[in-house]
Length: 208
Ligand SMILES: [Zn+2]
Ligand SMILES: [Zn+2]
Image (cartoon, rainbow, N blue to C red; front, top):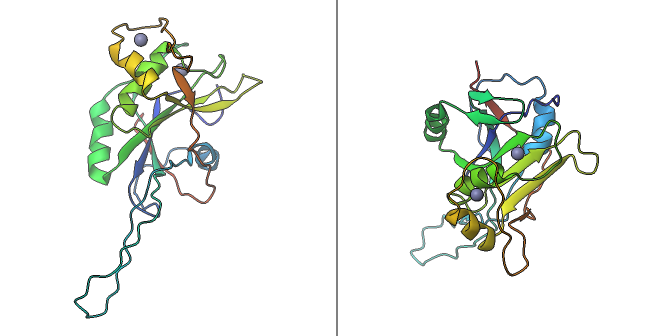
């Protein structure tokens, strides 16, 4: 059990807003600073922002397009059922209600392998598929505090190879997946994640 309390399938949410907006949530986590260190992530998406000349001329003005970024603003910890080797979010309608209330976009999820190595299990891959099919930038964060070679990872399914394999897989529970025939991996490290110590992270703990 690691001290940042991420043994649950917690969900990272972001909004399109820039910079991160003020969001009122329940603050339950005494280690918020540690959480923010590992959940401050963004993608390489493009943020569109127009610069408007407010003069009265009717001539069309220049519009500058800048790089767009997703900022993680909120960590939602859902109610959950868990065993020593698994965890399942329940009452998911509460999560969706927060999405709607705060206009959040689910950009990924985070969970812990308390005693296992840092990798994506077959169940993890299916969970990640459900996020990534909705939001291509979605990331799975795995915390593995007892893995001496790698304590955490930012993962995503390779696209299209990994996504195609998961789309066609009908199995549940722990099982094996075939590897892509072209030699690529079914999942890969996210190359578009940045740890930003200046981001503010709100925590919505629904467990109580
Ligand atoms: Zn896992
Ligand atoms: Zn499968």
